[in-house]
Amino acid sequence: MKKFVFAVLCVISTAYFISCIKNNASSGYTNCTGVEPDKDSSALLKYAGDSIPVMRDTSGLYFQILDSGAGVSPTGSSHLQVSYKARLLDNTIFDSTATSSNLGGIPLSQLIPGWQIGLPKIKKGGHIKLLIPSALAWGCQGSGNAIPPNAPVYFDIYLLDVN
Image (cartoon, rainbow, N blue to C red; front, side, top):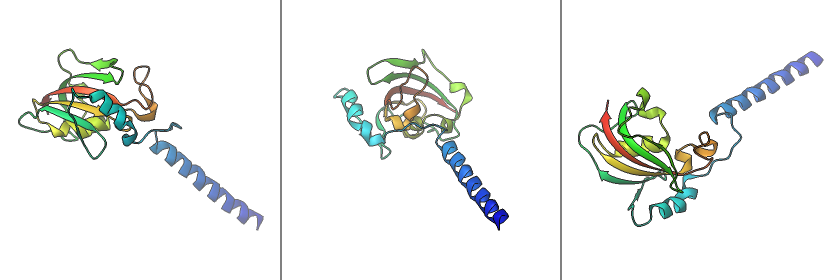
């Protein structure tokens, strides 16, 4: 009987341990707390002000299409050539391309969710401004020293080519 109880306890504790590992794996092994996209809405709209008339996607992404482009819209498997400027909402530029970047051959599906949602709204040759809630950017983890945790971000993107 003692062996049976011990075996049952081992199975239960192993199952619990495995479920904890799965839960941590799906969240990137972090203990940080992200914010819902709607929590960033007021900051994003304040940043846009009157100079960036934006539309809102159901995901919480705000965008302004300056040129819809022509030809092909990107899909998840598309490789992109872009020119962009990226800012925090205090106007700190944290990344940009001088002329163009092919993003190292990374497909759209592996970029931040804000790009995955926003860029298919335009076609090759298009120009879009994205105001991205932190949940659709780098979330509660941020990115290195450049992007703090839970930081909404702004991108001004020219979609030069879609492969």
